[in-house]
Length: 183
Image 1 (tube, helix red, strand yellow):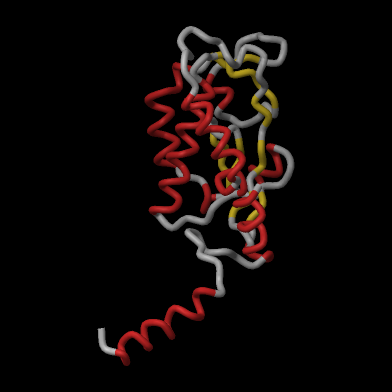
Image 2: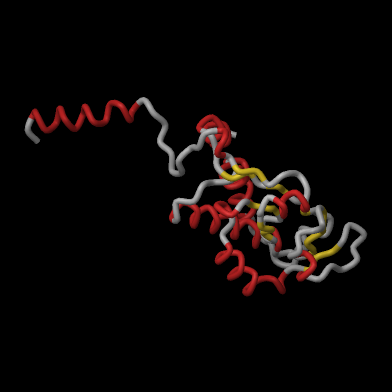
């Protein structure tokens, strides 16, 4: 490489060396989209319920195609129950009106974690903004360790687990990206 070309290349890299590298662009605080704190608020704000995340997400962070495809393939693998263990139909769960349910299935956690990985990969590939759940290293690590566990056959890991509804915020500021990436 000629010296002039190398100097131009090095000069181009210097400004980016002082900035963080983002796989998803940060937004200003005013551009973070919120889903409120209740199912009614979320619906009024135009958010969509995602059964496998058990969360409401604003349209830019909700992947309807992925959700519907996963639902068509895996909805029968989850036996939803109220907190007192009375059954809840999947169609009722999809209404997004129950803030706490029990997913009674030895596969739910694996389904959830696999789904979250797919949501992350699709969000990055489609250049969608990230929500706070997808961007948290702690959740990704937790799911990775769960998927790597051995001897999972026959377990009913979620018999006492509760799925508590989340109300997603779509888009992350630069400081939250840093915080969540190190959390």
